[in-house]
Image 1: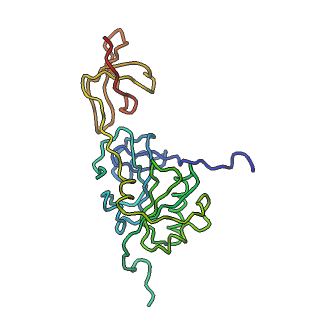
Image 2: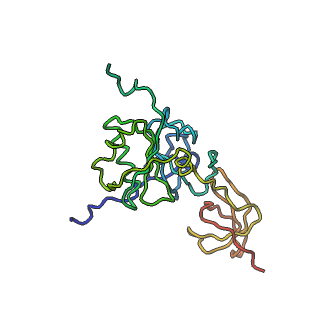
Image 3: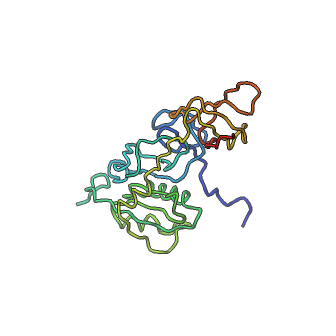
Length: 82
Length: 159
């Protein structure tokens, strides 16, 4: 197998500190909440594809489809585990 | 009668744990997203739990779409997906509340960044910004630095 063909196992994304949205590392403004504060220190991922029919999105009060981190370092979150 | 994807009556969601090669969870989840969008599958959400290695949880309306979602997908194991309860899936996806554990006046140690290894006293905590202002203890003069919360941890005071 040619060297250097193995794709990166973790995508190069950064998490919005305010809403947890995952965006490309080149993005400067969060498309979900408009925040400009990001961190590379995040864990876990939620992908919401159909926010209107997803029961998970309803439970977590996520209104917009997209990628979200489950844990973001130093973030005070509103949606807490029940 | 042909019912288009948009007009299909909403079926209740089902959550399935899909087994994948350890370490590839996020990449597989992104491939599932692409496939869902390309094929118009009734996949509503995908969870990559931070605690579980080798598992991706998929929320589907039509279980038949799950088969189309994972068929031939690289790094998905042949093991049959397992139906799990919604409560379990939500528990895996609910973020752990990470409230800053430092407060004003507390002595903290800086664990990364340019001031790594130094200690400081907290003079202000900015929870929304995720930062703290510290007075460095090792400095000869009163020097206040602002560092991200993730770079500090509480330290015991030296006597």
